[in-house]
Image (tube, rainbow, N blue to C red; front, side, top):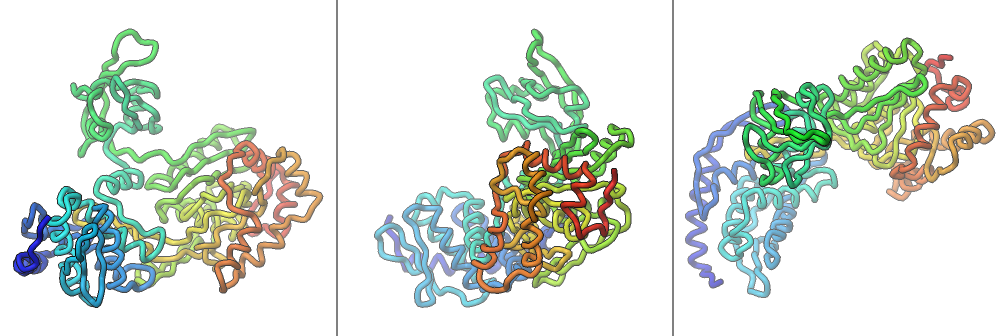
Length: 535
């Protein structure tokens, strides 16, 4: 493709005028967390892109990163990362900054000078990035075909990669799915997959609209309000079953064993996905928490009260299974911890932004009435799961078994952008009630099961006849080194993080500990502040 530098520079001047005008017109403020705010702007279309809107998204996103990031970032470094990742949109395209100027190179062609690289000036950098995109669209077909979301994804993830491994950008579609997992969605409370005849029901939310009208796992949904689903893509199927507002929906369903199609009328409602499953085994309530969303604390409370009713007053203990739990909403982890604590600290958060510094304490009231609690963790348990575990372990309210956890003690704030994409930005670090930072270190269990394949009886017998190595390791864990990463890695080797696959062993060990008063005394000889040993 031929390119006239003089022609480009003339057009660049015109574009800068348009973009500068557009950015001045932007008004309003941001959306952080659950605060819903709008922006007003006047569209300015250049080469098929609304550069005014794109300018709003870029400027707001980078402003939020600058103000809220855990450590104060370099503006130049952020945009250098954005430029690096932007090159991934076109295989032959690359961007570089040399001698204070931005260059675009396509394949083996000579680099094109795109102008001066702003120095530590966020508004100028925001405008420069629009200019970079427009120039690349002139020179590269992949850039010309790319959608605005492709540019946002590359820019923000490139910038965020310069900060830490957990900060990330979710485009408009993925952000909507994330909000569904956190806050719920208006729909039927089912998960479906695409099948030849329509949509196959794979799971159903307990007490959701689908469950209320008798829809079953394995049902094939043929039509939704008269729309045939067989020829629809999975996203289109989901849109047909979900909605923006609550309302009725009529489904045609093929059910195994039924000769005729069924017609079922249901009511779309706000549905929050289940994150808690439970059962009672020999007087022990077992709760598996898969993640933490808007409803998790309530679901834990409901599950325990149901277990009490089922056990008819004979409940002997409680197991919280957090294996594989990646975390989720911080406030839900705090609420779950508070369900079982009479007093004490739950966690402290420390960051650069004033609002990122928080301290949480328990309010009197233990819904388990002092029943023994065992928590099972593994190397995938992270973030909110680690905060909950540390709160109950440090307050002597629970015994922890399994392996060292992931060690993600960072907390992200969710920043919603004008395009409805989201930035998950690390803005604080969590400390256990003991004061130990969780990030990088994780949780040391009271009983280590790393590499353990012996029968549960042998594991339990070993606790009676040999000193528990975790007792000796814990003082070091509570006073971790402040030197090299290798020292932290060495500490974590005391009980190496694993993705536990021996589910039966872990559960059986937990059952025996939580229901045996003598074993509880052996496992926790120096405890007793909030843990009750009941026969």
